[in-house]
Length: 322
Image 1 (cartoon, rainbow, N blue to C red):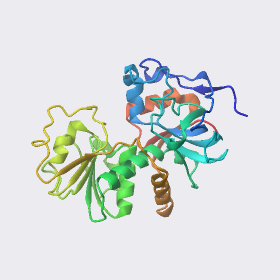
Image 2: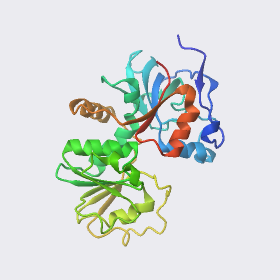
Image 3: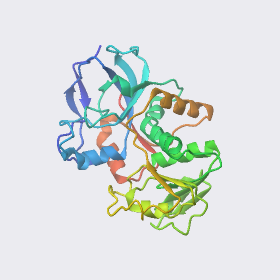
Image 4: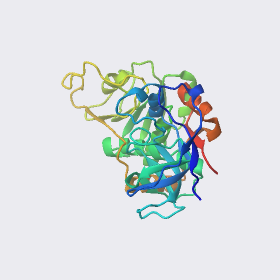
């Protein structure tokens, strides 16, 4: 039986972590082209922090809004889709938590084309750590960087959930990995990498042999990253951990070194094929996502504080229902 109301985080204005709270909110009514998912758990993401603290003011954000760009759960109402009630699924992106209500809730009404079936022995917390993080890592490495086993991959800003996933995938693929962090105390967390470096903001001249680069700090260090690379190298700008969202004064002729290629990955269009590839990779290589810390939904304010602190090593996951 689907209840009339549910617990959810509902935002209308910028909200600090300590002020995030659960409220009673109507369970969405299903409609054609959409399915109702009972949320079991969801991963937390940097973009949700940006939404909660500032982006909520943007005119293109539907308000009130339930945040959350990904979740893992079960089909509660399959509507006119080919899903079955009780089927295990994940969902991510496509406007979740911005254009329509997202996953910080007990139920989420989601467009069928952004909901994907999963077959895995991972538990709900582990499943919830996969969708956005691994899809972004997978797309960045293979679709954008065309990663090959003989590559040396530089990951800048590697001590985040996405960085750990990228290291895990690249090493399983046979690549050499150079990983950076701006905190010296976090160097031991990069033990899977072949080389770990403290990032002072300038790596040019310190890194040799990199043929591919995953830039997770963003525009703040992108120019320097481009100048670290070998001829013929590719740099994929995927993250914005540095808090700089635009590359002011960018000159595509002068800013990109000759013989180096720049691309970026936008994770808004996942597919069932890619989700299957990712979960199959985890199964075949006997890998599990790096869980940083897990919270109960009742402690959502503490989970948001952990997200905002940037001190959690690995993916933050919130368990919504058993």
